[in-house]
Image (cartoon, rainbow, N blue to C red; front, side, top):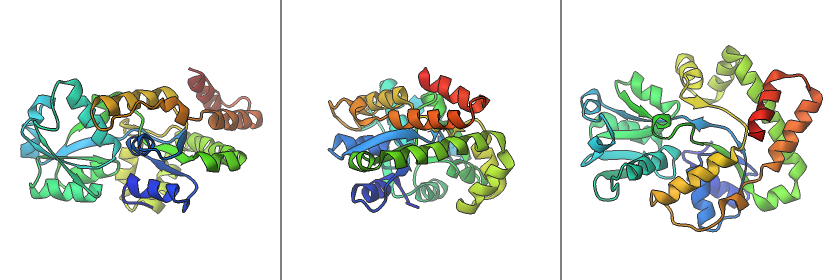
Length: 278
């Protein structure tokens, strides 16, 4: 477990772990700086949000209302990039027209919002609902700013994949089977998540199946490319790399084929194949 994506990606880069799932912004930023990462699978789509105290939330009616405000965020978090990109698209200079405070964790963001030291904060699940339980209001979900944007992607060093591709295929096949379980067994899925996320089960249920986050194993190449364009346009990074060179869809394709050989008539897996093809 890592506090933020930067810590986890440093562990992958140094060889301490083989694979990890981290928000799209972080691996793309590392890639832009020369790290030999490959995105080969998906895990999460959307799942971030902006929270504020009720009196502050009333003021934050649209993106223009963030001008002059102070917003807490976690550096390299997907929601951070989506927010800055949305501001840029709206013609707002986020570097000069508001203040963005980068904190170390979503928990620190919630504390800053509750204390009133910032006007709003950007966090991800389950911290969105945790904040709401603690008296904050949800101002906006990230999917309202950029619909179906990618978040957590499966990331590894390209050298690790070249050395043990079959291991990554089997790993991805397990994730595909886990996806089917997640779709068809909601209560059991919540029970499993609760073993790892020390949060009330009702919050886990709301966050997991509330429609503002989607756990999909597909690498979503088009979505990553779109995110790459957003992260550059927003001024978060500046890179002319061809990001498609750092996305490997073959692992997912092989894993899905293996699963379909085992369960050729399964509707969930057939839908994943159709979505992947699209």
